[in-house]
Length: 441
Image (cartoon, rainbow, N blue to C red; front, side, top):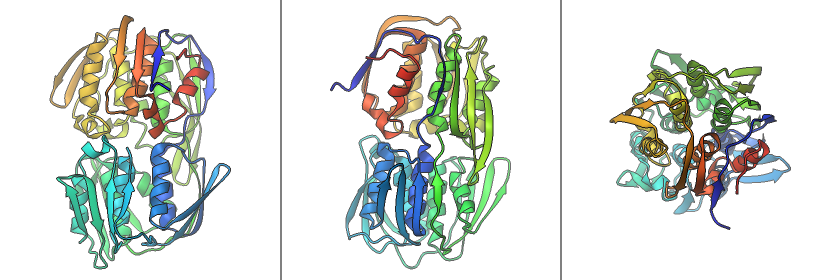
């Protein structure tokens, strides 16, 4: 079947309740932590996307057994450094930077040589932010000029490190934290604020960790060589997936939406904070704490008068995956919105900041860019009637989803390629759009 869709009609008003796909970050982490636990862990509601399936395939290649029973996955771990791979095993991370980078942290004590590869998009992403600190632990690790493929061979003589992570990369921070698990002594990390899912997993599993929070950084100390037991875990809904439907509702007429059982970790809800500053009215209901993570139902309705924003840079890391869809709201808002220091967007599956500027200009929005800062001149009356043909965006799932939301909100005749890209994170995306009444061919 053709790997494209057509959208030729705006979405009609809707009042619905939905559940989005499970959180990808927590799905991948739960599998990786289970692979190092002692005993059989049970994970429910695991996201069955390409990135997570590749995670399961990876632990299987490393000698970890897993089995699916209905909606539950059983994973048998053999404790820290419990992997038993063959020498020269090749592991394919596909499109997943989270899998590739975190897995390297778990391989620091493996005495077998492992090669990590990825797809075209992942192979363009910088891995030096992982390989350099891992070398500090004493690991033998080689890369293709800081890109994939990466070869790693662990050592029995690991040493703890002191490391400053100043990019706000949760993947980098997490890789170092996972490396510290197998390392004697205390590893210390001064990490710029970013997602804290890994820290919460450490606490939930009672792995020795100390965290001191400062204004811009967290000071993290991890005492290594602490075995932990198997666990049960239910993966909540994904806030990044929810963001597309939040914006679809905000920018549609006379619409209301409830998104059930979503992870609202404080380090992930920058998108909600930013949109509420722009005069949205997004509300969390039925709040709960589960294994250290916050969950809630998200209620959103159409916004009448959106206003521009001078976005606080402190919110960047907590909304880094959602800026493409936030830019659409800025395009509709009255006034000039300013976003600064967004260089990390170009370190994702595609150069998203570059793509966002081209995309906004394509739909008639004035954009001024200076290095990693942009100004978006909003047009509350934006209404599209032209034909738009979207192709060759390195199969970036979020670019595809942003394009769909744009077509359904602003109109025009759209042909959008790479629909299979959503399989990496959100296979049910198009099905949920159709449930809300979208006409998609």
